Length: 207
Image (cartoon, rainbow, N blue to C red):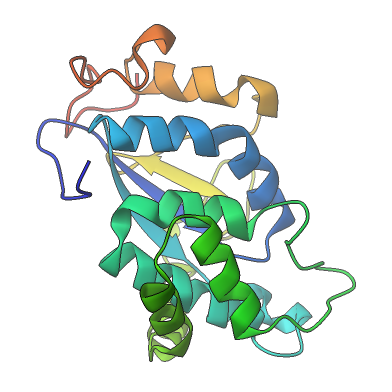
């Protein structure tokens, strides 16, 4: 698909920090399903990359990776979900507890692995989106409507479907793909089928 917004389908908001290990675990379970749904025009996706884990890196890694992701989402949206998957790859994800400096070139390399062109990947890591994602983080983490069950404040990973938080905390990671499809009102067998749209549509609550 071309990545343009589709009518009559749910909008999925994804809130993540590029260094978040919990985000990585969930993404490894869900990424392929999200990409299939997106490619089939069965969902719209809004990516909200936040940067609060800068505190555990020595070089503002979260800001730099989030800025690159925001740039890719704007300029090559077809590959944004795949780029998230590459940022969370087990052989790449920087350690939250023992951080090793990670260069812009390494971030760009992950974008290229996701299918992003060299030109866009280089522009993504040299863009001026860093200050924007930092300001967006300040706004995002203060939004009370983004607090998940059992949390005192904003936490990631967070998914909203048509503005409703998808409470997935009690779901095993292996079961997340089918549970996600069910939440959209979509049979698992119809994931990736462009002829079948999720029953909750563009405005319905989670099924």
